[in-house]
Length: 101
Image (cartoon, rainbow, N blue to C red; front, side, top):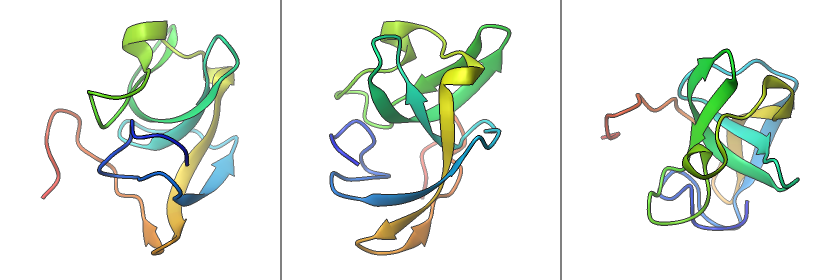
């Protein structure tokens, strides 16, 4: 993982276990392809006819759907299952609009 947009959930250098082609649910951490071709890790927060609305966990850093719009289903490449390095742990779903304890 590169960048600070997913702090505090993820930090730069985290290595993720992902499942390509998995169907996300609201709250999942996902790997997406933005319209410019950039591949990024974001939080899936809403699904509608246009695709997935994705957001960053750190509102002060990075790019998300507020900049590029909904991400088509075909451009949601994978669902992150766990952080495997440096300290392995599953990625819990975050309830949208609520902070984690």
